[in-house]
Image (tube, rainbow, N blue to C red; front, side, top):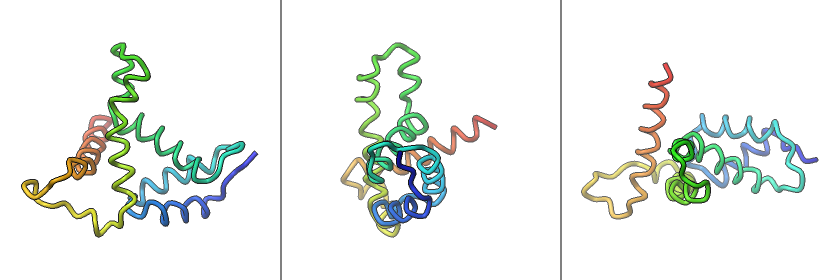
Length: 127
């Protein structure tokens, strides 16, 4: 069984996903460190955890399942949003400064703002 040290997980995030917010890194580190990752590399553990957490916490995946959408179809629908978030985290934070909407070319530039807004709304609804 493989358990990863929190400091190694954090180092991986800071190197591979420098744009990932500190609160998200802390959450991911805790999630990854508490599990046994039999046969998985640290990179695999990070990728699996990021995919699962973002799918369930930052998309409408669970709602799609509840209304009867097939699991594979629900995953297909939410994957672009997950990919955009992970891709945005691969960039340095300075690169993530939002440009005015009229100057945006790539629709993925909206992903970070949309996901942050989704998270804020979900947090407020929980209170």
